[in-house]
Image (cartoon, rainbow, N blue to C red; front, side, top):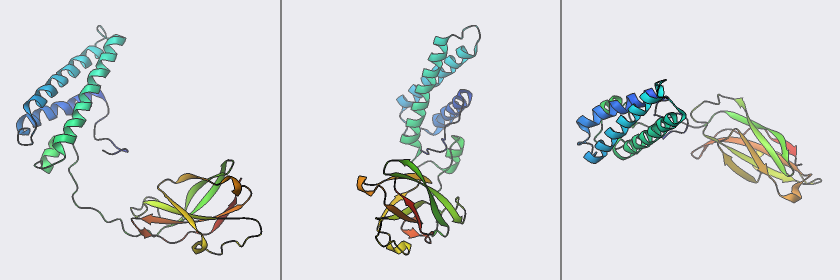
Length: 221
């Protein structure tokens, strides 16, 4: 299930409408999909309970804080059941695209879209967080942040004490970590306070790497 966009509609009226659509579709095809009769009987009763609770909660005569709470509880139980049914019975064959559409769900996309090799160039800005900590913010130098190849960022860095030789290019950086965040925090060892950290970033996508960003530096607090 996606964490950015849920398949379950917002609002109780819309959720109840979807549940009733499922009731109709699964009532016809559920046996072919392996939905047991007792599951459908339970689903039918949960739909009726949610419908009754919503009607009572919308009625000015019967609406009370208790009735409102009961309505929420009824829909919580119904939507948990819907998620369980989707996971158990709708994610595997023999459902066809037309079945998913009838259920109000997005059909499966069985053809993966290649995201390609990253071509954008990024750098970072640093900012103070606390003792021995630097925040880093990804900045795009070239390319679009929304390009499908931009899956994450490999941040390379080295710590240099005063008097030591600074890296001349990103290839001389020794440590790295991968992040999908455009803002992250690096925690340095206690003894690195007052030293200089040098950074460079590459976009990384399943082992494919984009061009180096420029070498930047910051004093470790």
